[in-house]
Length: 206
Image 1 (cartoon, one colour):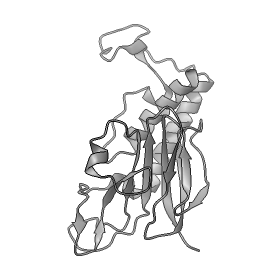
Image 2 (cartoon, rainbow, N blue to C red):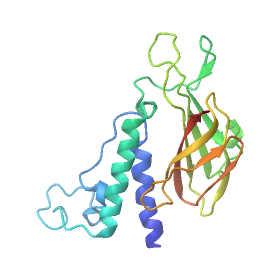
Image 3 (cartoon, helix red, strand yellow):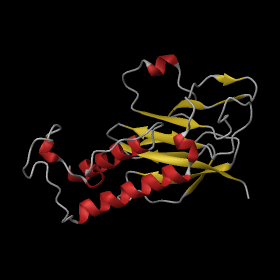
Image 4 (cartoon, rainbow, N blue to C red):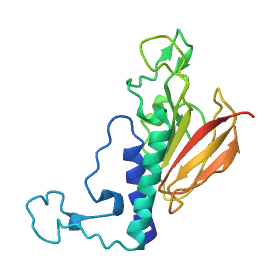
């Protein structure tokens, strides 16, 4: 149960820090400061709101994870685009900026969106999408984010991209520090652990 709690902390940090827009953290979230469950502790001059800087090993691991995710956000500009994502087909560039995927690697259908049993899905951000109103291809790396809220592992079929022929795993919250650097060919199946979040990037052929 404690291991799951630590993984859920990593899931929440990854979901926030790798979302589009400006992420906002409450001071201490990066190392697991809970305020004893009080979300309105500004007027509490007690150990509820005080910072305890004598961090133990779990807090240090979570802080290292937060630093890693922030570094990924900085290294991959597609994770902080200045344009709103639409998911619509750009006729001028023949591309879509974002596609939502089922675990089978196919685009999510309306029935799947309305289903209550689907617990694992992904979102692919295409690095070729325009960055401004000018009809010009972007030059960012494409990324794939997979989220699995199911209790057990789910096999996720990795889709094709314009780059390739493989994906490189950048982050997996099932790993304590999130660090990983494993590559997978298109159409291979990645086992996404239960209650976890994964980030992959497409890798150009050498």
